[in-house]
Image (cartoon, rainbow, N blue to C red; front, side, top):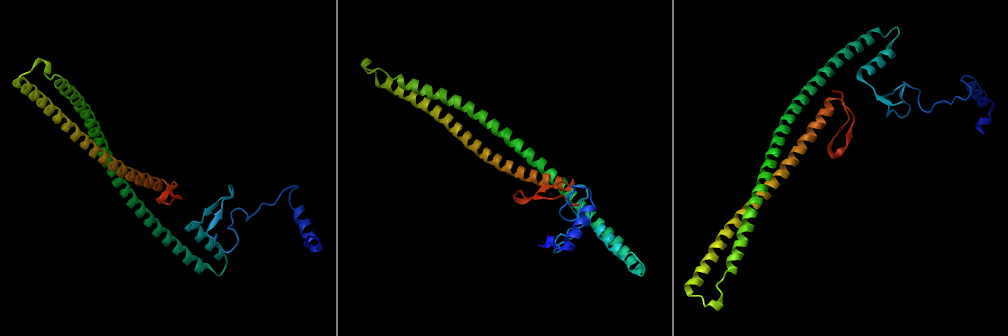
Length: 242
């Protein structure tokens, strides 16, 4: 019904005549101007080429105010705003530089910690592999002496030969000696396995500690480089002005 109003038709005809045939008006605010609304997006500008909202810088905010003050009668106020702008920008730049220096120092400490933790991981891996090789050697000795015990036990004097008490005692003594040697190697193997398990747990903890430090260093490096970085729980954060 509104489109049928004479005044509405006149406005629409004038608007159509002012642009090329077939051109469609873009939706949203014109490029380079903040979107209208309740003011929640008043701190953003729109990139004229991509249409992407861009943060409003402090300097641009002051320029916007000075643009509003351009004109006769506002010279004193404009001069005060210029002084405030210069003072604010100087203060903010000093704070930014101090914050960056602090983060760079923190990153240097993190890099040193990462190297220390990485060296610890490498040392534990060497120790773990050494223990694994040692267990293999102990296992070979255990298997050999286990076979010797079985052989000595099977060498029991044949009852059909009516062995003497002395012969039976000698055989029993050889069995006990073989079993004692086997028991020693089994104890060595079990002790090595327990030690390897302890080293494995230390290695797991060391790897986890290194990964935490590595993630912290990676995040800090991204922040200092002005890239998007991942915060706690993997939440992505926009680049910071550092």
